[in-house]
Image (cartoon, rainbow, N blue to C red; front, top):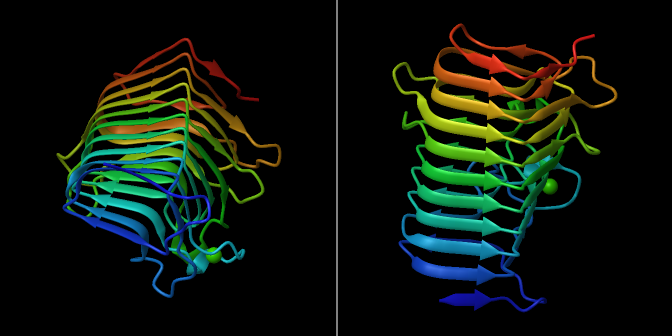
Length: 272
Ligand SMILES: [Ca+2]
């Protein structure tokens, strides 16, 4: 079933619980302000599957105050999710995916972000491609450390497997600094597996452009990690142990730090 929204139509929130096979065209959610930003979700999908959003616009309050915004899309336990050509703005987290599989986030823009653009845990088979993160709130606001794309193991201690992060762009824009692509599991013996980070552009001014830790099978290829003009700490590529099967190649970055045993070749370092 496909639900197409009239250009004048909007919702204040959308909850899909155990829903199967519904595709939304041009959904608009204007969620307004929230007094509980950590738990509030403009679009909440719990279980179910084969859910798609194409051409959506999902936003909390566009008032210059990032502390009154909740998350844009929060998907938990979903079997099959597409977010395509959508705009998600004025959010705490743009898109949160946890304990899901077969997920595609493509061609979308996440702007005016307090925490993370895309945050993923416990998920298998996911494509994150052709997205843009821009205009982060001041780092440290409400204690957050923003990233464009973050892979973590979450509170359930389940890492991610087979995640492809390709052709995304993270820019400072008119906002503050943020990390680019951050991949870490804090649980011993629970590594992420088979992670590809390819041809992304990160132009920022904090140390971690691309970061990996506790990953089994990590390929970082063809990315550009560049400083924004006012950078005092240019971003770098940093991969830490415990990690195995690490390949870093054909990348441009100010500095590349890899663990022993990594295959590092064909990179251009911008060290001055
Ligand atoms: Ca706001």
